Image 1 (tube, rainbow, N blue to C red):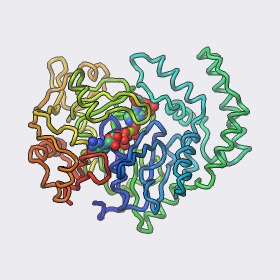
Image 2: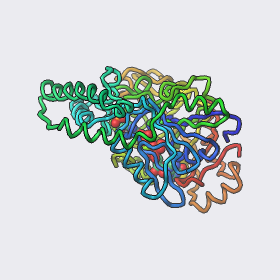
Image 3: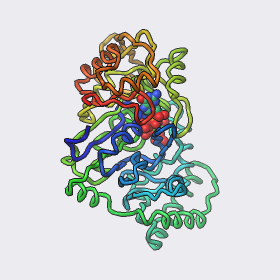
Image 4: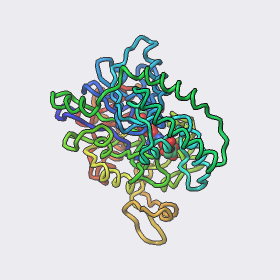
Length: 435
Ligand code: GDP
Ligand code: IMO
Ligand code: MG
């Protein structure tokens, strides 16, 4: 599928958990590198191969292929304890990771995690319902220029100088501003993180340099996004977003590559919709039908285990995602979950106080009060894995005609082709539209 490209990107087109991990794992055989460019261990990417489930939070989703190089870009915030436990998880099975970690990525410390929970709780209705992984506070320190980067853990003198200042700042902020006397042992954290640095050192290097040289040498790169378009800190449902840019443009800043190096942008779209965390989701369905989608789709957070809120595809949101990311195609996932439904609603536009809304509103109040207007499409019969395996042998044309009409409607309404359809969690349960 990627034969005509030097590089391609896979990003979430909705609210995250669209199945990015699965699509990246499927496409990895075609590339030499898989490079993540933003987020942290708020992400949970699931790969299923021959019944074995792999849940990844920081390691790029190309990790199951030993001959591929995986890259963690400067745009990430890294909790080294989580990263090392993911590395250990593979290395204890005798798998040596072929991995490069950017020296410029930022580090999450225990005080970031404490502050994350406290700030989110304080915000009440304006909270995002964060994953409590310290993501927001670590990115805030990066923006404020007091963050500590991976390279700082490689130089004791610099680490001491920066850590001393950051620790005192956080201790005093917690004590004086938040009135929290949380006991954090400065020396212990310093030693622990110095040791984390030693563990990470063999993997650390200049990501921008290596990727640009690789592309110039004709190597292929897949850029891996985390979260989704509506969680982007600029273009998403602010303030109910994450703290990084999650859209396609973030690959440039998060890896140090120019926009001229991006040949294709594949947006992953769940055939319905899910959202974990708080904030308005116009097409959310509650009650029996919402529970049906959640149970059938097993919509529980990969990172936090929280139940995901489910709903219908929202074309206002999806057209916006196509535009903001410049999607060259879409990969539609979990279409198997919709099998057996008589009618499947898709929101074509919103209504707000009697007026028609076709573009995603920035105003929080409009987001809260707009009502989706649906078109109902005909469903198709339920198919099991054996049915899908037979269809896969024959290719896209063998899919039920009403399923193809559903996909065509999404593609026509967004003016964006569909390149992949995923019909199960397993790597093999994937159909290339032109394949
Ligand atoms: P990500 O964060 O975008 O990588 O998505 P997650 O891994 O958090 O959530 C997607 C879930 O759906 C995972 O449990 C996947 O194994 C599963 N999945 C992915 N594609 C499909 C599919 O086409 N059908 C079904 N039934 N499950 C899928
Ligand atoms: P993947 O990569 C779904 C949501 C959280 C919360 C908001 C901010 O698996 O698709 P944060 O901890 O980032 O400060 O939380 O963003 N969120 C995700 N939702 N999938 C994710 O990642 C998410 N990462 C963060 O639930 O609403
Ligand atoms: Mg996920």
